Image 1 (cartoon, rainbow, N blue to C red):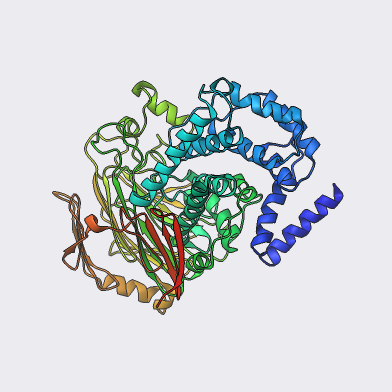
Image 2: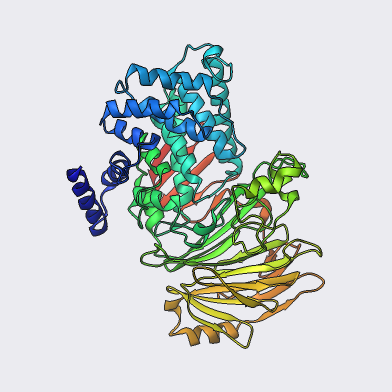
Length: 589
């Protein structure tokens, strides 16, 4: 034990002294679970890590039986760890432990879930376990279906999800937490699927999902509008599963201690190393660029004719900061994050390097749109696990009364909240880590985040409310409201006063009735016009939502319905064609 403690200290010291290579980062992640600092009994993740390293098989067998005897819980979150254990076994487990695992798949009935990540975890696990036990009759499975039936059903769902994602975008898109579940599922299939087509499809999806992250990451921090993010990680953006993946893949930023177990399960399966083109996309911020994405809403069970609605994302990225948004609205229930400014800091751990506003919407109508539970228990059921949902002070959530327009590093956010709406105000998050904050008589608020200069203009009066732990909440209790935000790099101006003079020199006009409206000239020389309920315009031309790309920008490109994705950087190009299941690497001419 002393030797292990010493090795852990050496590994931690080495981690901070110099970032290990990819193989070293993978090994560090697995070691963190195979040799945990805690003296608590081993969990499924620890067992999987030890089996990966072929260590302590007797202990792993004994502890696995204890966990299964206590009774499986967690539904698909039980399924994916024990699926990994079954495939990592390779003759290490005792027959008794293997028998206990087998019986659990007959006696425990996991819930299929109600989100996209739940279904993918469920069907990935079912596919692989049916493949492992190919000849079992329905009586040997919890759901009464034979191995063949379970495998065919799972294969159909997985293939359908891949096709929908590569034609219309992911539904649970760009979540800095839940992205890990998609990645580990594809890692499992890329490593353990026997069928060559499934294996190839999963490997290609790893590139696809990593490319989705790479173009919207800033030194390992995932920026952009997110379908789902938890309360504190929405503020301390480093504190997300995405940061662990960015570190493992590209050596950027800092991992959590230990790295999240979603990353662990990714590494014990394929431990896929992204190709060089993706490393360059993730790390090159030498020139500013705008990146576009089209996603889809979560399944809408009520009040809409279409199961999914489109999500239009814009991200402006440069070395010093990123500005990111979607078009606003309730695109995902409960945990949506619609826009923000994120600035680079050398060490983001413990830093709240972001700024944004939202309308803290809470409604049974929203929940009934996206969930199928009875209305009399809806809000209580959600609040039981997502504590802030029904809070007027919250900083996470979408609103049907919020509309957003972004052009490069300018954002205009408009609100038109009906009378009688719960929480009829907007919240603005102003971090404890902002510097040089100044409220100007003109109505602009100036601040600096790292090397990002930020100017914000609320369209209605506001007051400040303290935030526990530091920072301030801008509180503006007006139904028709809005915020104009312009960002620039510190290097563009001699000092904050010069930035202030440039902002005050911009033409800005706005009105609040009959609907909020803004017309302005941005710092980049664009004339921007935005009226609530109408299509925004740039230099008099309306945004073309009808031709919004699935991915668009200098690095990642895909057309809607194409089933093709092109990744490019410099003279490198990698093209994924899911229709033909082919990958082509070629230099750009």
